[in-house]
Length: 245
Image 1 (cartoon, rainbow, N blue to C red):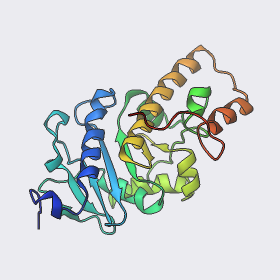
Image 2: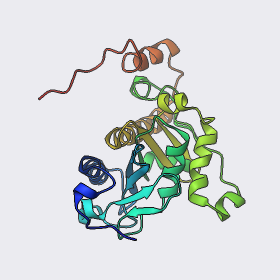
Image 3: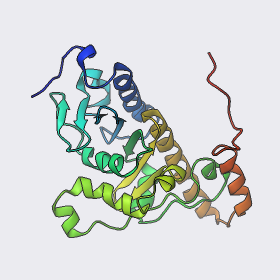
């Protein structure tokens, strides 16, 4: 039974999580990552056993908190909401089930990242901008089989990412994104906003890679790439400051 419009105090998820998911979705077109409604963001509440996601096909300029859909993590059932959830919902659920460290997921059809996915090519590490976030290439999955497309297609779209990363939560943390062959990028992070940040970076480094390849790419030194990754990640990281204000 739908519970849309129920008081926030009795909602399955917090008002803060709803607001974050809404804001992250609204930033997709602001960041130039989506044409029409081609993108969605979700966030999970593992204690409650649910995640919140954008509804299917709703324009960003019409989207509000009450439109968001709450979905059961275990079985994919709609827990709250009158609208159908994103058609990519089962892909999000597949990734949440496989990788415990993931708190938010973003999927877009951003131009340059999709170009690599359609070419069935990983986004290579060609410089430090890429290495700041991704500890290696942004990988591309194998093609889905006819059987995977015929049944549970969206869940299987997540499963080919899981297989690509060998179900390794550590690998998912080090490379917070992947390209689904002939489809597009999925990125993730500790929160919905972090997953969106990774989507923005994925698109930026994909565009840089295309331009670099066109100019004639060389192999960057591994020690330089490692230095850039470790100064932002891990126990010896020193990039950035605590939140200001």
